[in-house]
Image 1 (cartoon, one colour):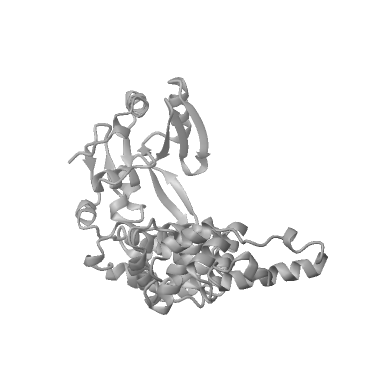
Image 2 (spheres, rainbow, N blue to C red):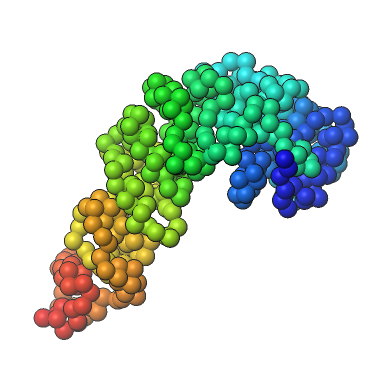
Amino acid sequence: MKISGDWINHSGTQALFAVLVKAGYQALFVGGCVRNALLEVAVADIDIATAARPEIVSNIAEAAGFRVIPTGIEHGTVTVIARGVAHEVTTFRRDVETDGRRAVVAFSTDVAEDAARRDFTMNALYAGADGSVLDPLGGLPDLTARRVRFVGEPQARIREDYLRILRFFRFYAVYADPNGGIDAEGLAACAANAEGIEGLSRERIGAEMRKMLGARDPAPAVTAMAQSGILMRILPGSDAKALGILVHLEGDLPPRWQRRLAVLGGADPGEALRLSRTEIGSNTIVRDEIGSALTSAALGWKLGTEAASDVVLCRAALFETAPPENWQAEIARGVASSIPVTAADLMPTLQGTALGKKLHEIQARWLASDLYLRKSDLLA
């Protein structure tokens, strides 16, 4: 079996392989680029595993005129920029010691040892410079069936890094066949080791949740998280019930993890997932307006197209109703509207606090009228 693609044939990629092999070291594509190529999904990053130690990779690459960045040299990884293309080059490794958050590794020359320390069988696939696939652990059947399964014994893999619990659900959301169901052994191992999540940084948890909620349909994965007690540990007070409804209502709209997070609820997603100030503000606005009486047009004027759409869809999902008729056109009407009364219309009769209070009152009446009240009505 072979993989193919312009990214494999790029002159810089082939040149990097050539200099490593010429120096006597095995080099293989690994992980996501091989997995995605086999699934005919776009390849974003090029990862290469090699028997050469990182300092040797650096010397070989620099001698060939490539730029080298020591991005993770203590873990065996350097980034090689070859003719404009970035490659993450990592020495074959085996785990020596783990504490659930990070691992102490030893370098290896054995690709089978390197494969054995990876998380899922679909990520333990390699390919040569010509695209010929190497499958040391027999992961191809899992990939073909779109089945997310841990390498070796699931609990052992999880205890090496508890973030793999969230990666299990994220990979299920992104790559699995939902009709095939979630791997029972993996799910049981995640539930049994759920306490390990408490030791993870919120930044790492937030990054995984963003990716999972941005999948085409994360509802089955999030439901499994809720049923296994994982979601409660990440987002206390959240509820996955409305997420599947939301995904259905979205139709062909691009997925937005922010919208999916808003419908999940929870006590403080900003702290739980280490959201940025901008993300916290956006989440708060949407959650606050879900319970308001503003129409689609009023939301469009107040929040803009994106946030207003999120509110309308989240409302419908949470209340289990259809969105208002022509809601997208109504949001567009609101975005294009301007309130017909300005401060100049009330001055100099009103000034300062009194002026602000009157403008606020007029705005509230205009929004409540679905933006239909005219200037004369508002000033009366």
